Length: 567
Ligand code: C2O
Ligand code: CU
Ligand code: CU
Image (tube, rainbow, N blue to C red; front, top):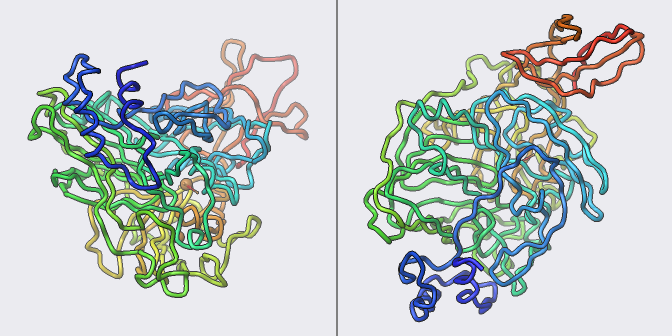
């Protein structure tokens, strides 16, 4: 048993009744018996709670979706939904320009599953639309080149009607697109100083189970927990030095909005949002992160003494609370016990375990290519409300088969999200990024709204306008609220109309047929035929060579023909 596990088992006794953790009480317990654990550090100085884990990094093996027992709370076993046994799911980390190729295997007992790559500009066929689910025992393959800004994305289940339950139980992980040379050249903290933090809440019932059973009230407002898990761990702490750190924050909660701040009001420099670096380095002391959103921040602990701590927390706020303008939606009480939306919560502790540390501050950071509103061809409005007791967009609940609108590939549009009720709606779009233009008509927007976003937090009764740009990928995508209790109803299918077929280049080199096409055009499936009538997708591995995607095949007797089909 490691030092840390030992400490946890001794001091996290199950005195719990759905009440948030009492850090001070636990620390007192530790003081009285600290000598038992004398290790390399004096025990009195070590935070109580659990050392922050970082989920394993995916190494290319199949992504197996399964039910696994894990220890989330020391001394308890919790049935989780896992990818490759990991809670949360393993971190997929690829370099910009890599080919993402994975087999997904569903080993759940009875539920269908599909994984969606949130923030990735994936071809429609691999995007994880709920119609693409596979049954238990089945598997499927995805393969597409990752051509977009280095960024902090994530992936999660998107099974229709089950997304909330699946994500709550653990089917979610980081998907980080890297460019280590660029980051090193910019002077950004890298390696162990670049820390992904998935923040989510859970209802820590007496058996520490991940049970997902929203009441009617919670179906309306969202399923909120009483305890925050960071990278799957309650009461998390990490040891830092006094240098500059980069944190990649992901709000992986079903419904909770966090107003992030440090307990000592320490400044955080926002450098990135959903779609990568914003091109700015803006110092703030707090900002909001809605479900599905990401933010990258730089934090220095230079002024924090050896063995001192600061806490990342969520500050109290009043927007989007039941009763605060939520009339007619089950508002004004009747909610479950425990912290409500907007109640203050502790998230995790940063403890200076080492003095000194790298203080290098980064260069000027590159700005992403933002959609240009002056090029927009049309404006679409989406009104979010409750109709006949269900969350709707423009009065409609989601239908798996209905296409709600078609947007031409390559164009820019203005989307206007009109929140007509008293809840937050974090509105998310697949397959495209947008730029926040105005909130209630004001273009004076906060730093965390800058850069490329795929999810915008629309506050109660607010109207947000964004400029959205569709790339060259045709096909069907989704737009929805990322409050996962709203998602299955408050969602639309839309189609990006196809673009021209790219030119195929076919060469014979050293007894091989080499087929290539521009790799920046996602969404095309290479097909092969020997009779020009029957076409089948090629099953060989594709490689990326320069700006081309290539397929290699040994020359056979029979001549093969190739074509690209949009997927
Ligand atoms: Cu993160 Cu359609 O979802
Ligand atoms: Cu998404
Ligand atoms: Cu919503």
